[in-house]
Image (cartoon, rainbow, N blue to C red; front, top):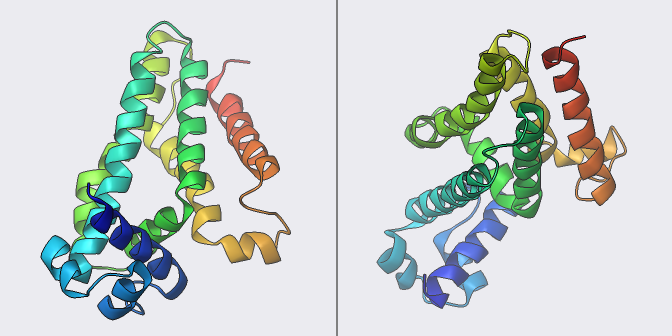
Length: 200
């Protein structure tokens, strides 16, 4: 991807995170990126195209990393594989926090884009986590459980802090982007999973 497109996407991500998608204009994106606004239409067919490109790039990068990690973990235990998947998801969200927030804000609003994102990407996200859980159940490493319910519970734990960072800071007095918080959240999720999945 050329430098101009990267600058536009970076500027849009920053502005969408600060002002929301609806509160950001093409003119603002162009000013932040230091480009002519006509280039946004040329490269992305407008603000909607910028948003769609940001979301697609976010998920495609995440899925590529998951596939690379999975290829290296053929002979590891189910619980270790699950822990690595959780860690990758959390790290990726922390490293791409503005886009993570943007994605989940957009998913909270009924729209054609939200439906497309859920169909194209969130179902793959769910499938990736479900496959690890189902493999552990099939091998006998995990107790027989409702995989969908566990995926929903874990997804909530992983997504909520990034969707509501102000709440996490002000109400819970936790610093979302610290190493301490990342370790705490990872350990909390894994304690929850071990308690549900592992035999006595």
